[in-house]
Length: 355
Image 1: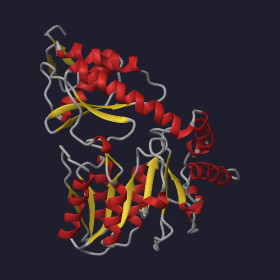
Image 2 (image 1 turned 180 degrees about the horizontal axis):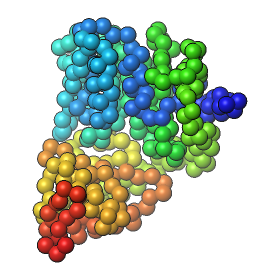
Image 3 (image 1 turned 90 degrees about the horizontal axis):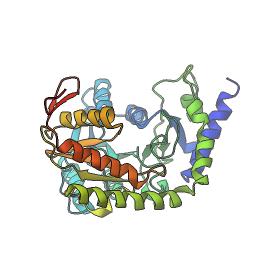
């Protein structure tokens, strides 16, 4: 216990330096879901208030909002519907503007930096400006941000920002941050704390016998990230590779990308439409079953999604990937496309009736 606080602070300060943030504005949390739940529970709310989310949000975000409603009687959620194809970022901003105009009681907005369902980068700064205009609290779900985007909280000017280190920064599982703008007047309270003190370190460091080893690794994580050239060099590799991989698979499968502007494509992520596969539908359940087949039969772990009745792969690129990885995946999909499949409840299939 004597080493707990110094180690926690050392980890916090290491990532604060990387994020160009005041370390006293940052706390360490297990994941973005925990952060969003904590923020929403800390916001003073009254009967009639609305929490605004998007239909592109990560499922855990929706669940967090549902739990909040159980604690705040009379508070409701509203959903901003964003659908592809999208012409430009201004179209998304206008969708949010209409939501504000239609409901004068929006108290908080959870904004996805990278929308989960369609994997698109939302115009966060412009949406935050709308929140300021309508006197609404902005909460940025930046789960995919650390390691993928250079962040500047002063420029974005959100009220809260949270992101994971275990997605793109090589950190151990269960390692994230939560940032609070100094302009926010109400206190941020941990949902689980062993401390009677109100300062952020006490609230978020002392949480029973929770294992903080992932946080203690953060100085080494930051050092490793910098040793690989930092975000500039890593981004250069990943953006080139994801473009090569996308072009290769589109040509191999004779398909295309999700219909969103290139300016809204995250640096390391792309959505590529799969070819038709005999016996496989286009639902989310079909996507999940196909992921099982790829993992069990081809030793390929990937992310498939159903978007507007079509199946897409969410391609990602990191410095440990190479083009041969995507070639192997592309050939596996072509192999599957030539077979007939019947899905069972356990996720396995019959192929051409053989087994």
